Image (tube, rainbow, N blue to C red; front, top):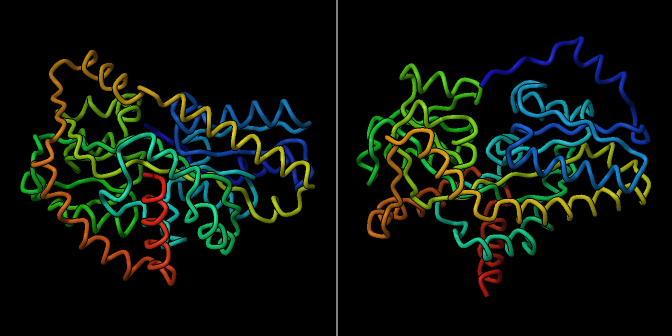
Length: 335
């Protein structure tokens, strides 16, 4: 996948489109392509906003405005009004957001997971002030699917990851997680991952199945391993100054559109993982897809406590409160 850096001319072109909270056009950047999960969510949000207001939503998929760090900077500065970005990247700004990378914390059961995202006090009460401190209005978080490893060699235990250079997002806790798994975590911008796997600079990466399929990561790896260690989470945010200046009717339109998009994307993802894996097998019959047994997963699960302890050290001043509330939210959602 390639991307272009946002140039001064590009910024100027964007700024000419609209300025201020009451402009007709709002800009929304996200980390994936239009036909991937974040893109589908963004298109539903756009549809709802435009159907219920006089505003137009201009969408910017991955690569059109640079890498993740670029779009976050643009959101904080107000060049774009909305941004969809994983806590994997915002963890540098909001250390507490790294809690989503404690392995085996989030459930794999879809109903349990969705109920957690709908009802979580952590997401809806504790996180918004932390995002606000960074000039961001947290609008919603949603899951994107079970995270799977793609590697050059089979993985059935942490020993199989020894000396494997594994691409991770620039997130300290994710680095710690793969250290605990026995790999050599290697932070790398997404635009360099396919080439890195092709040339052997790295030997593995993780993502949901739909993303492995759509970005053709299977072309440069031979094994997909379902360890069950996480579910990819993403967050949609608005520039806070922009949002705070909006009239109440526009804020209502935005919140309603977010709820509609959340419902839509939950339905959209039903069966998506298995469908994506089938497409991968059709495209590359030689690929090996392994769903680890509970016994095989146990050594990976045994690392969770050490990663959790690291989160409490590096996860910011509210790390303990965030972790405790998240566990309580997950327990409540399970009932």
